[in-house]
Length: 308
Image (tube, rainbow, N blue to C red; front, side, top):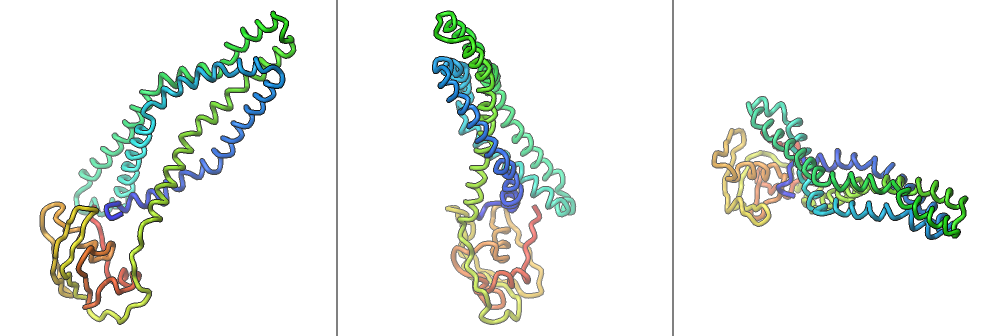
């Protein structure tokens, strides 16, 4: 939560939630329909002649064997594309939202290089995955719809043996031709359903975060705006960034935090802005602990502006 960029939150809550609308509105009913129709046809084939019904599934079985080849490393590849796509979307959102500040600070080239790298990695992970699966996919899509390869010779042999009438042979052949295509369509929705599951998990994860505890009303109004940090500590997960920091910022003064990268400068600013709670110690404004002030009121007086 602490190290989640704002672009990531906006991307999950807005873009990624919006992207599952198509799956929920269209994929689920179509997925169900494309499963029920072949099931009904297969049951009818069993009634007509169970041997022809099984024969119509031979190419499906061969195609599924090829399809299993596509599933080699599926979990790792899927997670890789999810991670790279999230980085790309987050980077794009932050780049677009902060373009004015980026240009004003002369960091356009640096920020664009970050976006370009994310875009390249986002594309490469899909291309690599598709290249690895293309052979299995082509073979599966070629074999599965060709039910006649098995139905015609087996049906012809049964007809010649006198155990299958010509009318039933023709009926089974016609019905088998439309048995597999709906199943292929249903299988094509598996990625969309997996995407829905992933996005719901991301949203659930955000909703499970602990909220900052703030009162609805201040015990007394803040009369002056000097800021003081008293023995403040703070850590990202298990990595302590601030340790026993004590300082005071007088009202009406301009102050600068100078130090090396990852030295805690932006962390102090975010803590002062009450974006996070301190791990230890306290931050006071006008002598009042900021944790005792309503968040809405405090946000009207203190603002945090990121420079990217």
